[in-house]
Amino acid sequence: MLIFRWRRLFLFLGDVALFYAALWLALTARRFTIVPLDFYLQHVKVFSVFLPVWTAVFYVMGFYDLRRINRLVNLINISLISFVINLAAASAVFYAFYLQLGLTPKTNLLLTVVFLHVLATLWRRVWTRVVLSKILVQKVAFLGTNPLIEEIKRDLPVTPHLGFTVVPLPEMGKVNSSDGYWRPNGRCCVDLASKVDVLVVDAEEAERNPAVGGLMMSTAVMEEIPIITHLDFYEDLYGKIPPDSAAKPSWLLSNVLHKSNQFYAVFKRGLDVFGAVVGLVLTLPLTLTAYMAIKIEGGLRTPVFFVQKRVGHLGRRFIIWKFRTMVVGASKAGPLYKEERGDSRITKLGKFLRGTRLDEIPQLWNVLKGDMSLVGPRPEWTREVRILESSVPHYHLRHLIKPGVTGWAQINYHATSSQEESVEKLHYDLYYVKNMSLALDLGIVLRTFRRIFQKDSVMAARAAMPS
Image 1 (cartoon, rainbow, N blue to C red):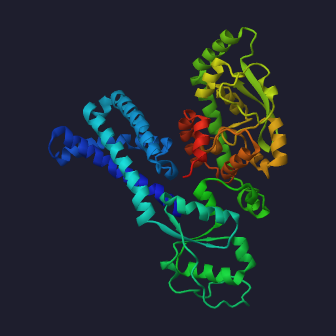
Image 2: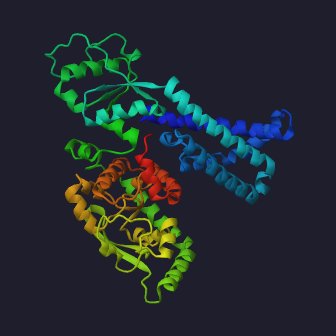
Image 3: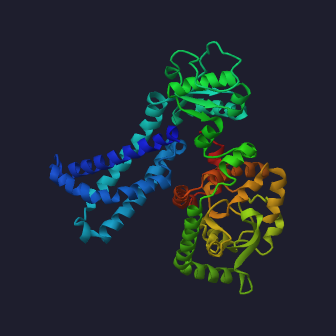
């Protein structure tokens, strides 16, 4: 929603301005004088080619994630890694197409990237610490109360970088209790807009008390104050959906059931086939190398592939393929087994394959067959699903769509080994079930490149830290 997305939009627009400011600073520093306008515009024309590349790197590395960039250590780490990637990408493109671009600016390129990342880092520090939390902070009032609303109320005061502050609802005027329905029939208080910027409503409670809820909402409508349900506010704030809320028939009917987008489905399948074919061809050398390495480590009789029955779309069973990373018979340890550091079941080569996610390459075959998609909830072992479906509320909802090689839960949460963690992971899976789109799929694929290099232990520690 706009009340959330304008934050990232302003960060992006700031990056665009800083990009051209960094270029001007680089040219000025190189010549030790103010550069002529025509000279600057000549470089602007060429350097603008790389703006989308640098913006994409910022997105993949989490430079637009307010919760990540709020911590100074995270911000510096992201900036340093982004600097290396951007410099390498820009250098490669410049020297690959220098004849077409007409420039090979070694020093100017380096200085521009340096200035850009310094300015972008400072910009984010100012944005989270000053602009959002003090200048553009939005006052949020809650109409109704329930456990989710109370959770949000507890979180917002300790996360000022998100740009919201909780305010009480203003005192209402006289309420006509005979009004049994909602209508914009008056104002409940004087100048509500000066006290509240966003009204978050528990729709069910408003239905139970239509006179009070209707009067407050009608006032908000007439004063052009955004109104959002507490479920949508929670979803946009945290990027996940509570499974208990998704169990309600009204939520299912509105957001999932009978919701069809044939163009998206056909296009997504086409992208899956194309991506799987390209991926299998490009990774063929890695596949052959892994095949020979597994045989050398374990012997000629050692099976190269690990196959296991997983639960897929609408509960259908299928066989998933992965490179073997454990000793034969390791799955006998049972479902929801928590892997410890130094797990003796994992081979030395398997540790490397897991760390680099190369063991997932054979799943592209599952994508090509149609058992899986490139993006979707991760398919779980049938034995684990039996346990989770009997203990995790509405776990089966994640099977409404095809499982994926990567997904929203994978880039936002760590691997699970308990029922409690599976509940939290389901929050994210349901978010994707409701909001899946080509734009979201592209964002997940891009952010997966960052997730490849993140250990689950780091993700788990980050999830346990306060925002």
